[in-house]
Length: 91
Length: 345
Ligand code: SF4
Image (cartoon, rainbow over all chains, first blue to last red; front, side, top):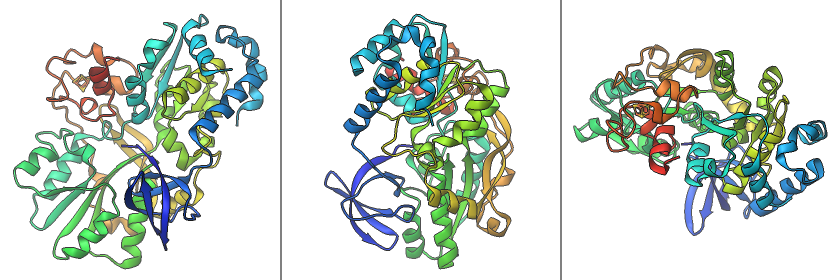
């Protein structure tokens, strides 16, 4: 039930937006985010919850890079040894 | 590091035995669908927690919806997920086939148009969900109040994630880390899990829903074991603070309340009700205090709390199948029993 899907904002009319999901156009509530046409957004139950800030591939790359910096590629079985270094990467 | 190295590291992990829990129905489904448990070292155990909103909705909620739907002039509106959830005697789907009007929608906001088209009817939205969906209900209430719409009401079964996680931990669950729910965190922000991480000294990692994203989040949970920290592995949509506009609108209309969880009992402060000044829009959500099992042998509650696996239920894949569900965990596509059954997790 908590599924949310990414789409592209096509048109904005007050709090209502038209979001394009690969050609499928759906009306959604857009009142929770500052939106502009062309924005990639995450939509749940007909409501825009967030503007997507980077692509999945970019995201994956940045996290993997982050792990490299923290763990230096250390195998996970040695994980306890780099626990302190990891602290810098958390929120 | 490459994703293949992450995979190898998770397969070869030979440290302390770890039990990790996901608390999001979409994670449960995705983990099963991608066959992730099969990739992990036997020393990493993944459990499904109470993250499927449909699965934790008590039978009295369904009973009350049916009672309302049988009153003349009332229309129940709901997401499709709720249709087959068993009440004490019947489900919405069974009632619909007997003539009760139950209309499925993809968004609660559709009800505004439906109500305008049939002003003589009262439309009751079955508002079930966690923090991901609660802002959408807040937007609906906002619209009802501002446009003074007289023929839309709600029956609420709204639950909040941090409270149920605290309840599990206080109950002695031996969990070494939580895969924090991705879409709940879009609204609450990853920081919502920080007090829990610090209190229980375990990591919370917010993860996405693709196979690679899940593997990364699990890797981080293993890597950060024993540390009371929060890490955000889904930064394209999750921020530390979430969506403040959505949270603010929720705070305008809803207030914390005790909530009954199917099979788990009442957890203080784990739900939301409309504030007193808006309670006139409610159809009796505060009085839903009983939970009746369709089949006395169903162990949904223990499955939801990570105490038992679906396969340990005597009814699993025998009397209880997706075609003939005996408990809510087999109904929803995001329920643990359903995921174990369909994907042989
Ligand atoms: S297999 Fe069916 S009866 Fe058993 S716990 Fe799961 S939903 Fe309940």
